[in-house]
Amino acid sequence: MINRERLLGNFLGYVRTDSESGIEGAMTKLLAEQLRALGCEVKTDRAGQKTGSDGGNVYAFFKGTLPGAPLIYSMHMDTVIPGRGVKPSVRSGVISTDGSTVLGGDDKSGIAAVIEALTTVREKKIPCHDAEVLITIGEEQGMLGAKAFDFSTVKGREAVVLDGAGPVGTIVPSGPGQMTLTAAVIGRAAHAGLAPEKGISSIQAAARGVAAMNLLRIDDETTCNIGTFRTEGPTNIVPSRTDIVAEIRSRSPQKLQAQAEHMRACLQKACDDAGAKLECTLETKYVSFSCPEDHPLMKRLTAAVKAIGRDVTVIPGGGGSDANIMALYGIMPVVICTGMCDVHTTRETLPVRELEDSARLVLQLLTD
Image (cartoon, rainbow, N blue to C red; front, side):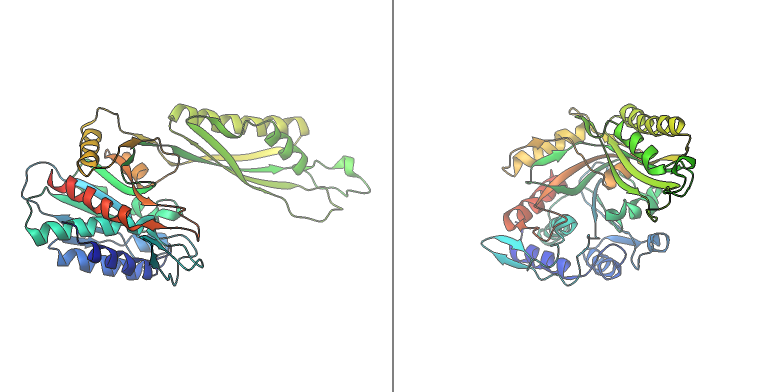
């Protein structure tokens, strides 16, 4: 029942509409208009004023005829850089670009799937459940749109987040929380040639602290990485300040906290040994989420995937998404994959069959 040409046309139109994080205004307007045309009750918010965007989150309620609580369908409209002037093409059943930009299947593939499923339901007058659609801005910058959204306006308590890379049928029922460590190691400046012993090298202290850390893959639930280690100054002065920024992720809240404290403790000991001072903060960016295998949402998703003839694959998540923010508000989220490949690169592609099956999966969830 999915209209392949309409679905593909919508997707190509979306990716041609510039919407790098911060410039989502055109997509906000386009999506609001399309959802209103489908008979949805549509609201756009002022999240852009808080996030520095010219757009806003789009929320829509689609009234169905079948009983039951509405399921939330969540996607984001922003793309990473370079995402302006996308020139998509379709060759041998695969959508790609000319190689100068990302495609934007992350996450416009999910948007196209939901719009097509709702259009099919309305066009064919198919009985369906109530549906809530939430399309956010600023997801690629740290789920900024979701963080600014008023979730008290949402009726549903379960959400399908169409924002996973990989084949349709892949279900991601869990995702890690993330903390950021921001540290400054404060030493003492001195002339490096005349009196280096009067100085305390912030670089040396910081390096010893980092060398003592357990980093990268900690276990099957936990990772951490240092992204910034920075000191700038002339070679003839013992450096007095070194800045470090790191992230820690874990699907276990206890492991997340323990790894963050381990890293801070390593820096503190190195500073104490060197006579340096440590300024360090730990900030929780988002919490983990986990949907049990026997949860009704997992059972419903599994049945829907099988109903469209795809294999079910369940994998744990390793990145953040709007699902993590929903979990903060008592909503049970699950991420599903939409077939996108090599996201966040100019090699990004999307097979047309995966786009079609994403729409078929949403249609199945709407009507089962």
